[in-house]
Image: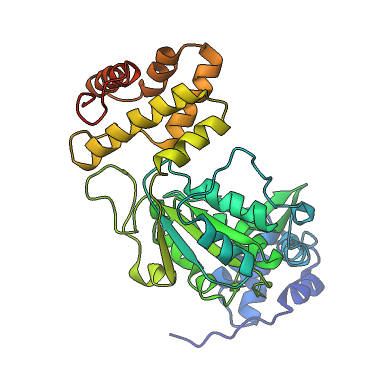
Length: 358
């Protein structure tokens, strides 16, 4: 195979000087032969100047202009000017590992934490309110199987006809020294491994624009999940994945979040506008269902979040049983009916441990 010389970095200027700005395939072939370079090689490098097949306009420097604009414009919108500290919610009641999570957030020390627990028990809300109380900015990313490096780190976007670089949420959090919340992390694919260096506190290199971003003081990462990153053996959390062990190892601490104690859960419902009697009945009802669930007697559970939904439904419809029915309609008919029958027993004052069984 004959040796092929490399093109000069200024070959476009050479083409323009020799043939002008409007060139055709014959001229490109002649130029390639004079430089001992293959025609396909030259044509490929002229792709950004192509007008149509066999025709190029060397005054249209789209490729170069796009890259220069992208590097000069690291963000699309001035979103960094917004205050991302969550608002305090007066309905919030702290429980579980809240104080420990708040200590990590308040310390401004880089210390990634993994919070695992069943759905609807306040994992995300607790992190949000810990940031609110600590006055820390929070950037939340909802992870799915489709989440990739472009979603997390950033990429090029078309804005007003120009392609510019747009920072992803991870870069925003790094630069601001904010708390990065990776919500539902166990839904992620292996594409999440692009965050390995971020989880080591070392920042990340943006290879698309040749720039290294270091974490600002205060930056840390918190992840929430329904599993411990080992998948869901019982099939309850469909879509959760087994996460890479090296990825999980970069979280030095794991908190296990349970449902709140009955007195705490009652207070949560009272704070959401529920009357004392209804709140007490709902908490007793949910407690029996959860015990049966953990014993393997039912496949569904009533979460704290669903109890709050029932309270909200009661405010709208004005009838307790209607509110409960509408909020358990998502379950299969047998489960739904057994839950409704159980609430009727609880509401009638039957002993929830002995008589109010599912």
